[in-house]
Length: 437
Ligand SMILES: *Cc1c(COP(=O)(O)O)cnc(C)c1O
Image (cartoon, rainbow, N blue to C red; front, top):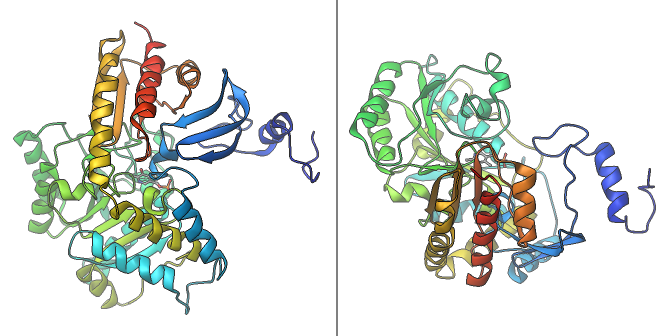
């Protein structure tokens, strides 16, 4: 084994040997079966590899590092925000203490999210923000004297994170969490939302909320785009249907905007496409421009007041790294950077480029559907993707994508140039072509 204590930089070979021996990767076995690419640095939309892969020493990141790096890497404004905060403090506990970056961020989030979201809980990852959202909803009903309202309703095909409560509302089949059926809390699932508005489906939503109102604490959904659960899009009208049904039957509505937030679908938040406000909203991923881990759970005054009137009038949650100043500072800078430019035009540009560039993929054998919304492009195959072959085909084109299940998809950084976007589309198409027919 290479010596990890040696002050000399690890060669890619040494690093990979240590990686294989000790390091667990997402959704992987131990030791890993695939060899990861070693990234040495990243700048703009490009990942620089420590060792060329299939003839490429740089890859355009078609994934924005899982929806997060919307401004690309090493953005001077974001780098400066982190450095500036680092010169003051990188972290202090949030119990009994507060600081400018967290306060500014919370106020900014309230300003830019739909009314009447008013209060902000800063969490350290998306999954934790969903845990907090669920805790808020259950505790609200307990506090106002309706403790039987403990279940969640959602539609199938969703993804809300990997910790326990979020897993319980992920798609129960085909998702990453099938293994845990039986061990997880049993939530209420309705059919996945159709792409277009169907009154029959709206009726199913209304009926499910009505029938289970006595036991439902909340309905939780990803608005407009279901991400890691299948990259599906649905008619925004269903959000209004849910809002009305929840209001009519005393059920809270939670929007998980961890993937869709900060402009990805073409509106700043996907909720804006239906002009609907949730009672609780989760944000994450692009919140810090992909720099540091941070998420937020926002709620209305009604939810917060309800909790505060209860027998236990506090929200018993407090992550060690809550409100981390570095993350909060870069989140503020990232939001200012986004809103300080014509980001809607940039997302429209991506949408047009993805539509043009991915159109040829629709004619490939074994491709079921090509769909594009905002800065999201999806090629769905008629069967499971050969991940190694598809990834290699994209890398040969100089692009990083990470297919899963039957999906090859891209959500490029908003700063991706037209030329680079065209290259991403060629790479996704080449990856889909490996599927064959
Ligand atoms: C990624 C994601 C999560 C989980 O966030 P983590 O930061 O990975 O814990 C939750 N919900 C949605 C919609 C996501 O896309």
